[in-house]
Length: 143
Image (cartoon, rainbow, N blue to C red):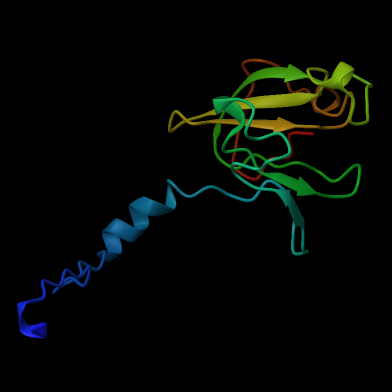
């Protein structure tokens, strides 16, 4: 066989567009913060598409679970409006009866994306005055 007759495809491109300073400045408005305070290390116990519970429904596929000590403040990752607060549940443990019993706060971001902060402490969001319609800023404590 003659190697000169082989067809080769490559993903190498001849030029790469580097963003200008103004491009980088506009990206800053679209970057998300981290939902837990730092500096410290947090363990990701389940990432996007996780096989424990994130595969069960399309709405949970991109969920990320971060382990942190109880009472750790949860921070808004972007500016937005609180859409819903559910923080009256006291169920715990992995049991099918608890599958839809969780505490959460949902924030609709100014870019149209939605963040659901789930498994928050009972009463923690309400204690900070969080309720539907409240505006939040990136980095603000939600619960």
